[in-house]
Length: 394
Image (cartoon, rainbow, N blue to C red; front, side, top):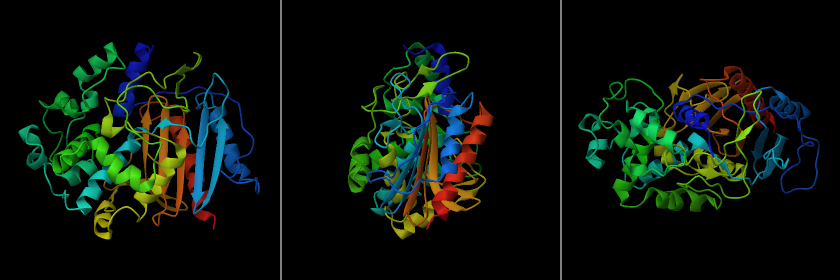
């Protein structure tokens, strides 16, 4: 059963602190192209970067980085995806994608904008009049851009008390905002940027109100099916489909604690509950970060970036925030994507603006700016090196 420490770290994952991970030195052979016979050796320098990452005292037990260029996919791994068996991470392992789920809620909302079912100027008051009157002027655009001022339900004392008593508690995700319904807005909507899990809960509720359909069904109709995502889902429980990348909390010198199924995901829902695989996450971000999923008009709104506003955790290079999408300006060029962290997992998914190339980078421990900043800094450095490999290779 999850420990009390695990529950405290679940709060950290929702509100941007960190779980840390164990160091394991088990390294895999050089990567090979997925689904193809052995080809030229991959960039050995990139492989060494991953090897050093898992060998750090506070490094993750395992890592999998996937570079896709057109119909070519190169998979790099180091360490293990399951400490108990020594099994390496795999391209089709299920995993918690954490706050990259916010990009999925963005995809649903923006596709509904394209269809005329929603407008970026629609307000909470118009679609969700039962929500606090002080929130009524907040627009869909502000929610997607994290400029709404909504207080974060995941930091609410009552929410955390429930998790403390039962980490696998099944919340009604459509009532999560009730935990902060008596709280005032943190600032005038549109005036500041504040990353908040409440924003994407409200986005999903607005999508439901506009269509009369459940958010889970909208995900299937507007995202999963069009993109052929058959291993991506939004569960409310704590179980992960098999096979899965195990997530760990390791606080040396203690032994690693497997937290893959320690906490239920109903308490994050549209903000962080989606389960996917490295392969399908790459397919999603190429469509969402590229021009394939939205109209030109809606995409132009999506790509109106605010300089200096970072994802959580920050992605490689210099960050800027769009509508449920971030711009990562690296030393080698620009990628569009999203990051996330959840107990046992830290994620990055990014694509070139033309949607032809993608990078997914998954480690099976949690890190963020609130704890282990040195590990996060190292992770971002390695991610930028992989971004450069993606952008430079022609």
